[in-house]
Each structure stands twice: as C-alpha cells, then as structure tokens.
Length: 43
Image 1 (cartoon, rainbow, N blue to C red):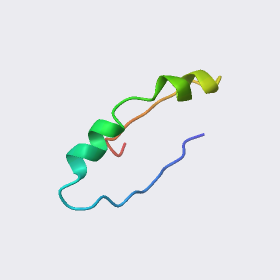
Image 2 (cartoon, helix red, strand yellow):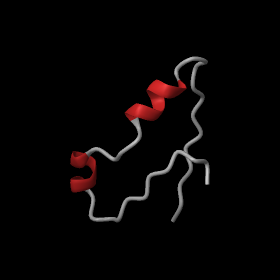
Image 3 (cartoon, rainbow, N blue to C red):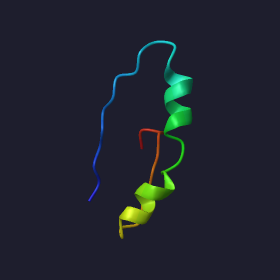
Image 4 (cartoon, one colour):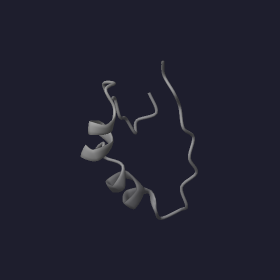
C-alpha cells in the first residue's frame, strides 16, 4: 500500500521542513513491524 500526504509548506520554511523529515525517527521505526520507505521527492 502506498499512502500520500500532501502538505503545504510556508514560503521560506522548506529547508527546515526537509531537515525535520529527512529520516524516520528511530522510535517510529521501532514501533512498527512494517518496512519503512520515506521520501520527500514526490515519487
């Protein structure tokens, strides 16, 4: 299953948003038994 989240980011906040979401937090990855694929490229 592929789920898409469409987020609007305020102008000037893209770099901050990308830095905060670059990696899956370890506690989130550990809380799920599913493989995690995390992308910001819109693919």
